Image 1 (cartoon, one colour):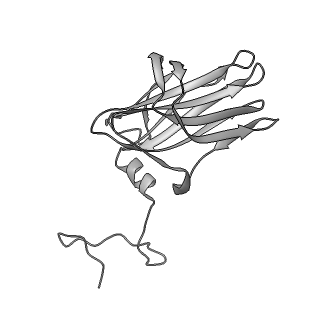
Image 2 (cartoon, rainbow, N blue to C red):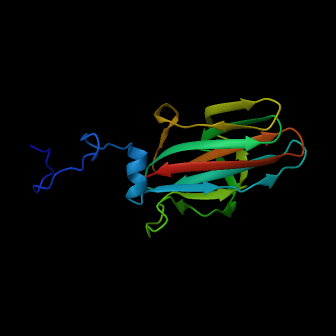
Length: 171
């Protein structure tokens, strides 16, 4: 007897092992067209320069965020909540990870907004010498973003660095 969905159809089982197939929630959201990625692209920083990405979560929306930062020299970084933004940045493209999906993201991303206060620090990052990055992944590193709230991903370099910031989220 098979495990049945409502409506009588059976769930899919692996043809070799006969076990029920299961995927993670973020993988499921990709298949549903509800998972997005935004990135700053490779950016050359000035001496001890900064790179930022602002994520704007509108009223009625929420997102499950993971992020990474990378630089070709030592750097510090952080995720902040409720930064003081005095000038909008350049709009970034929110790429739907299911490339054939027409679903737009509710959360918007921008690069290099003018920030006068970073807000509440949620996750600091310090990376030492050498080309390194901060891969932040898995459920322990996920932040569930609040509606009507802005978030700041801020990377501060030490030299004339090449850096990027990447954010992934599902809604």
